[in-house]
Image 1 (cartoon, rainbow, N blue to C red):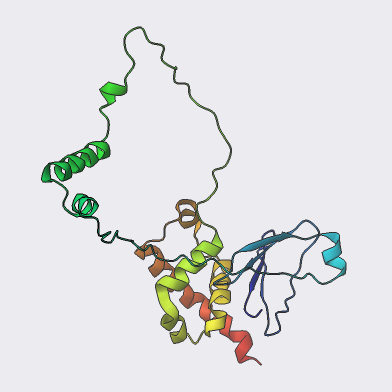
Image 2: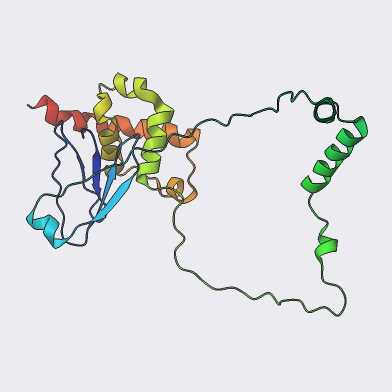
Length: 214
């Protein structure tokens, strides 16, 4: 499978599979390799001793395509009694149903949920630490967001081929693009997009250099 991005999570080294689906990446036993390709489920594999001695075969599974929800309306049954009930609901019934929906959607008054006099109330403590909070995004999520938000035309204007867009974005990341806050909250605003584009200008020349020197 061509153009699969392979990432060594320990070293941040990346590789892209060629037209034959072959790839080569540095690693050691215990390293976590991540395989990413648009339209396929993300795969993670831990390198074993056998993988060091012999080629590693990877199988990617296509992502499930979610079918839009289809509303099926009840048709006429030919039974006058049933059809009149389904299609000519009394106005009072319709009004009551609407009021019930509105009531359920309302938030409960905190006074209703408060403890009554004499009831036991669980005391509030200071809590405890559960360690480092996991970021909402990783580099793969951010890469997909940038690729979609900026569009292929943006990268084409930089003379970056479609098959190399993901590799180029990872190259910019590796160059020192600050993204800790973006990954922490899983949110990239317009200011972050503009900052990424400005940082691209500082990296594009060095990215092209090896190709120019051939």
